[in-house]
Every structure is written in structure tokens, then in C-alpha cells.
Length: 304
Image 1 (cartoon, rainbow, N blue to C red):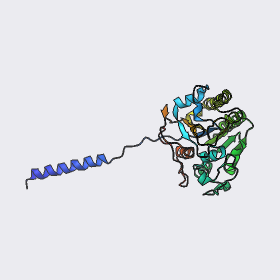
Image 2: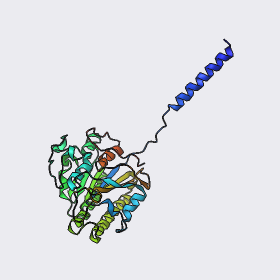
Image 3: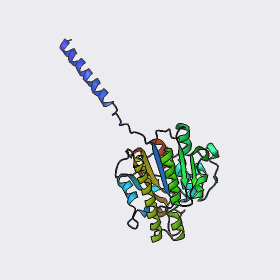
Image 4: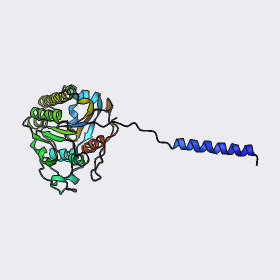
């Protein structure tokens, strides 16, 4: 056999192997630095429909412009408070965590998994196991929140009389203790929705007050040089219609989901199907934690 011919075949094989090797090489993914602090802000009864032109909400709109958001995220059913706040921080729906009514203090259905403090494991439990040396806190206006998290695992458990007191106490904790996660629950505009009605001037006035408090949180973090290491998530438990909620209309079910801060892409509308229990999974993922396999939430990852 001609030696030149053999050399030619050998060179071709080397080229083919090389090309195949290159085609199977996975691109190197850019490593995204983790935030040191995550703040979950929950506004009771703040329906996605409230993002219209009837209220001035400059701080929330800044978060949207400088972050990622969806105004088509959904609550679980029923579109009520305890069931949805539990879902938000427990990474699963009521069929697993067991809280099924607006004011549930204990699960009406036995929790599928029983964790610390005899409740379904929340994001606070996940953090405590995997980041045991970090601090965590909850500051809330509606007392019902106090039944939905592991009190023995947090460094702040504060029930404020007003949303202003709730936020001020949370900010004092955040700036002094530098926690990895703080959940801030505000009771408005749900109160206005129940007493006066949703989609009313009084409701939008309450919405504007929430926006002012969100602005206070952001400005405080910036003044303390913490914002550059912080991610803020803003969401709600449900919306409302007339003077109530708990039903199946989009006005009751659709909620805002906004994420803003360190390494978050700017002005991106999220097309994902987001359910409130995805929030806990997203927080765990942002912190680089393993997500419990018994949770049903999925992390929202197209935010960088």
C-alpha cells in the first residue's frame, strides 16, 4: 500500500477525531456570584392588576426596570392568605404542606413531611441545615404569619402593629445583623381591599404606601452599602375582587413577582409560568443550596 496514501488516511482520522472532540466540548458557563443577603417582601392582597396607571409606584417600577419581573405569576388555590404565604416559603402547595384556609394556624391536612417545630420544612429550615452559621429573620404585620415558619430557627420573630413598624424593625435587624434571609410581610393593601374594596382610590392609596416602604428598604440598603450584595424579591399572596378574594378569577389569582439586585438582569419580562411556591426554590438556588426533593417549586433561573 502506498505510504503517502496511508499518511493521508491517518491525517484525516486525526482531523475527524479533533473536530468531534471540539463539538462535544461544553461551553464554560459564567459563574454567578451569590448574594450575601436576600430580602423577601410580601405585600398582602397586592394583585398584579394594581400595576396600572391608577397608582404612583416609582420604587416598584424601578425594581422592574432594573430587574426581572412577571405580572402573570399565580397564587395557589384557594387564593387566600395563610395557604399562599405558607406555599411561598415552604416551596410546595397546600396538598403537601397542609395549610388550606385563609387563617390556617395548623395544617387541616397532615403535612406530608414533618420537620423542625412540627411543620412542613420551609426555606428557613433549608438554610439552617446548609448555612448553619447565618442569621435569618421574619418581620410581619399580620399575626397569622407566625404559624407558618420555624420560630426556633430564626434570629428575628417580630409581629408589628403597622406596616411601618414592621419595616423599621426589619431594617434595624438587617443593618445590624446582616442576615442571609429576611422575610418582610406587610398587611396592606389587603386591609383596604376588604374594608373599602379592590380597585378603588383607597386601595391604590394603600398600594402607594407600600411602594414608599419598598423605597425605604432600598434606600436604607444603599446607604448602608449593602445593596450591591443583596437581592430583593417582591410578591404577594393573592389579589382581590370587590371586597374579597379566595376565588378563581385572575384578579384574585394573578400576583406580581419582581426580583432585583445583585447579578440580576435588567428590564426582563419573565415568560415563565411562575407559581408562588417557586419563590422558596428560587431563594435556595440563589444561595447555592440543595433544594429538597419533596418541594414542588422550581427555581426561576432566567434572571441573570
